Length: 229
Picture (cartoon, rainbow, N blue to C red):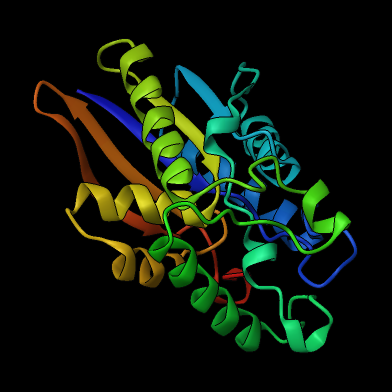
């Protein structure tokens, strides 16, 4: 069997002009995960990340901290959906709310609308938001198809019995988890809600395909380091 570790990126810069940058805590979370994985004897054959800066920097930070002689490769198939556009608040001049709870509420409402309309793109409402998201303008069907394709590509390229680590985002991990459980949109939204920064979801690959072993392990973090946004 092979193992695929899906890692959510470290905490990004919520509420700042450029969300797609790790916060100082996000950098520490990534290094903490790298140290923890190395301490457990994890030795991946390859490390992959999406093309978003927060994903790439998380992959590099944890790889360096773990002491792995690997250079993370980049696959935009692992990019997050354009969540800032989905969370845009018309009452606030098309800007996402700055309050975390309010942001989560409008984001989840936007996710439902997006998933219910197969030809509706998740279009960013500002130039800044658009610049941070390679996946801006895609439909929900596009998003699910590319994330599932990215997973299949990793599984098919993986040498037997090896481990691949993928640094990606909460929406991607939540969708893959929901799909492997045979679930749908509402479970996807609920799983996305609780994805911890640098949480690890473990999959195994074998003759029966890809199976979920565990979701969102964040035992490498102490309570003050646990963040969801």
